[in-house]
Length: 99
Image 1 (spheres, rainbow, N blue to C red):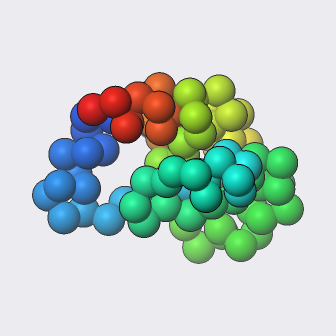
Image 2 (spheres, rainbow, N blue to C red):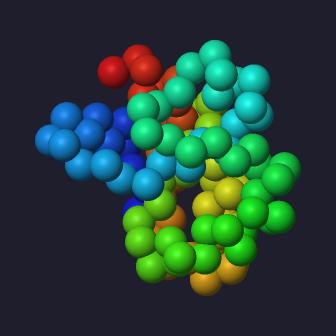
Image 3 (cartoon, one colour):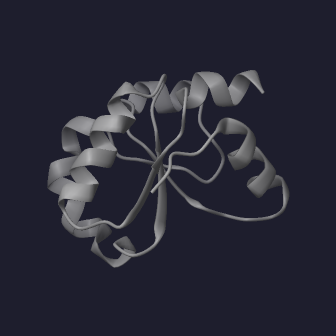
């Protein structure tokens, strides 16, 4: 599935959508700034949390980090575990907040 731009995510949220957003940054980063409605699961703990996300396997999940690198790794990990609609937020929260 194609990745998502900050513009598209902001438009969807402004339209009242509540997509599943997974923040794979460290907890301290999430405490400093976050996208409303996101769930924080640091990338290092994601392999242990995959079973907890099982019910979301066929739903769209948007993953993000600070700039897009860790979330690209998270997208690959989730995809390897059978998640079918994982999208990386291009440019991460940095690009999202710059909008």
